[in-house]
Amino acid sequence: MKITKAILPATVAFFGFIGAAQAGVIDNTSLVNPPGVYFGSGNSNSNFTVSTTGSVELGLSAITRFVGPVVPTGDTYNVPTGATAVPTKIGSVWGFVFSVNLNADGNGTHNLSNITTKLTLNDVGLGTTGFFDVLAIPDNSVYGAGGVCSPAILCGASSNFFAAQNSEALSFAAVAAALGDSGYNMNADDTYIFTLEAFNVDHVLLGTDTINVVAGKGAAVPEPVTLSLFGAGFAGLAVLRRRKKARQA
Image (cartoon, rainbow, N blue to C red):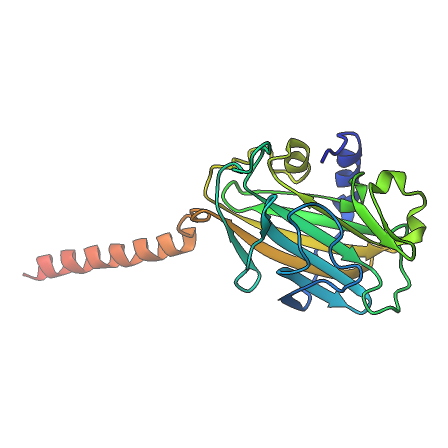
């Protein structure tokens, strides 16, 4: 899939004033069916980390691209590093998928034209963070009373649809750049934290969902400075004690 570079910077700038979200209720399950999953080969309606708040259902998961879902432990998905081995395909072996459903209980009052979303990525290894509105992606699949339409850019008024989905990968340069992760290395052990949020027209939070993706062995997290200083303090005390004993002798 492709994202135009003109759309994403504007989207990122737009979200600069929105504050942090609160955590939602998360469980690993299937998405509400319908709409379930209705986009892309190798995707299935399972192993999503789902957060449902009223009518708003947000879903995130990691997948082995062109193969199938990854079974998580809690909200953590362990994936391999490297490139996909699927013939004729390129890019990283793993990807992430998102789902926004504004009518999960059949009583929703929102549609895609009167909400915004914010997908945030924290690359733990590189220490980078970035975000953009997933509804700006032109080739999303969308769902409404008339069923599925894709790509979203050709589907007419977004007021006719209440759900959107897509699968992405950080090996797509435009996606990585929009998420502040232009240094992404598909061969590196690392840990990635994805958070998806939805807001109404007044920028009130409607729901939030988070997953962790551990690639290979995960990010090498340095020893916290506070612990290092704490250890150094004890070492210093030990030296002083030895000096005191030496003087007394």
